Structures are given as structure tokens and as C-alpha cells.
Length: 372
Image (cartoon, rainbow, N blue to C red; front, side, top):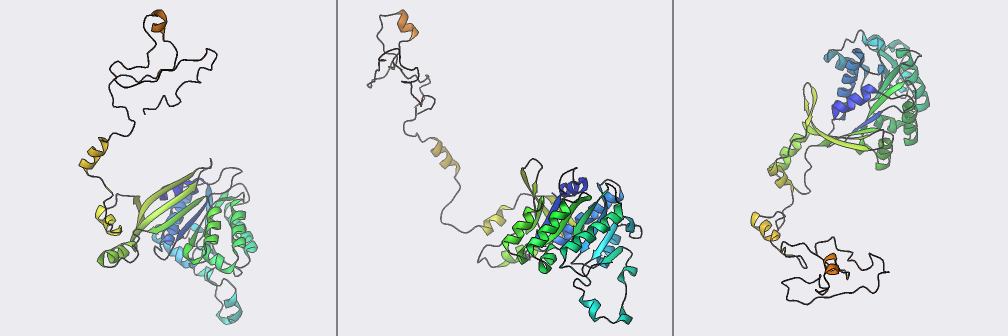
């Protein structure tokens, strides 16, 4: 649920709790996580402008896109970029992440890109030092919201780039420090899951309170060829499934699923519709037997009498326990035969209690409540 994610990030963290953290992961089969990242960034920006969000500013850690790209995205979606310097700041880790360009560049050619971009931008050239990166992020956030209890959010456009330059332990430590910071409202980042091993992906998912997975709409069966497979592959590049797993405060985990569609104007989300039966039939392997029952087969199955099943004479089933009934106590004339059916021609077993000192349940049928 994209709207639910945006609301959770908008509401932020409660006092004394860790900041909500969202990891958006995708793969080569459905590479649309950045569309989701941009959608959430725009939603939070609109909430901040309308003063409906706990966070009052955004620090974008740009590792995959240039600052000019974010300026263009905000401008295309109606955000006043000229006045955004008060609530948004971009930490440029894209232009020169390791500081190599600064060393080989001649002084005469040095240009400050921040003058060409209307957004507030700072360059960061030591991406491998995540401790320093944490200090810079928090300093920029305090520069936006002040030193009081106001909060800001952190957007990291590529956790995969961080894992490329630093160890998994360092990246997990950075996320842990950001989540526990008392002025950070929420954190969300992007991860290309097929670029890392399962251990790294599982560790980042563990650090996140929400995990959004961008999956392909159709999964082709092994060995399936032809026009059907080709049509499904084409649809996977325009739409897919958006699976969200969120951890609630009470410890429960909620799993939801939506459909998304990538359009020229952005990405849109819709509830999951029923899948076409013909599409399912094309994806299922061909077998020599039918897994469904016909109407006649259902009727025949319901008419089968199971072994030891009561035939349903309409009378209640009574099991004689060896004790005299109240009617027998009043009339000594009739013999003790309460366990005998009136119209039964078969034999019967009559049991007499040895003494009245026995436990009441000692001679009762433990399966008396079962209709067998």
C-alpha cells in the first residue's frame, strides 16, 4: 500500500522510538524501485510544504542521480524549487564520491555546481567514511530545522552504492545511527537486491520497519516459449506488483500487495485485480489428471458412507454406562437394559458397575462426543 507507506513516513516516530525505515528493493526483472522512490519523495515534499508532516525538512543523499535531476523532478511536479532551500538539502555523493576528480582537475577548470542548481547542495567526496557521512547528514538536517525538537527525514537513493564502497557492517551501523537519532523522523532508501547476496539483503531488511518489493507482474515458467511468454515480458516492463511487509508496534507483521503501472507522468498504484484464468492456465504445467471435481463427483463423494458412521435413525445416540437410570430406580420390574435399542436384532454388551466407589468418569466412553 503506497498510500499507507506515505502516511507512516509522514507521521514519523513517536518519542523514544526508532524512526520508521523503508527499504525499497527491486531487481533486473522489474527495475522500477526508483519510480517508487521518486513517488514517495514527492508525496513527503507535498506534506512538508502543507505542514502536515512531522518532518520539516528533507536531506537527500544523492548516490545514483545528480542534484540537477532532483531539481528537475521537483520542478516538473509543481514544487517551487526557488523556495525549497528552506526545507530540502541535497548531499551530492554522485559527482565525485571518492574525490578523484578533485585531484586530477586543473584549478582553472574548477566549477561550483551548486551555483548552477537552485537547490541547496553540498558535495561529499569520502563515501567510504560512513561515520563522517552520518555527521554531515545530521549537520545538514539541523541546518534545515534548527537545534530544537524539530525533525527531518533522510532519503538515500541507493543503498547498493553504499554497499559498493563500504562493508555491510558499516552500512548497517549507519542506518542504526540514523534511526536512533532524536531529530530524524523517517528514513527511506533504494536497494537493488539482485546485486547483493542474501545475507546483505536480509540484514538491511532486518534494519527496516517496512520493506517494499517491486516484483514483475508475470513469472515465466521454465522452458516456456512462444508469443505468450513474449507478451508477459512486455507487460513486465510497464507494470508489476508492489508487495509491502511492515512491522507494527505490537510486533505483528502486515503483508499487502498492490499493482503498479509506469506511465509517462509517473507511477500509479491500484488494488490487485483477479487474474485472468486463461493466463493462469497458460502458466500452469500440463498434467495428465484433473485437480477439480465435477458436480456429479461432488454428489457421489457426499453420498459415501464412511466406516462406523451412524446411519442417522433420527434418535439420539445413548451409551449405557452400567448405572441404573431414574426410571429403572422407580420401577424394579423392568430389567437393566437401557443400552439396548428397541428394534435392534444384534447382540449387546451389558456392563455392571463393580461398586459405587469408582470414579464417575472411569467407565464413561472418552469418545462419547464423537459421532462414530
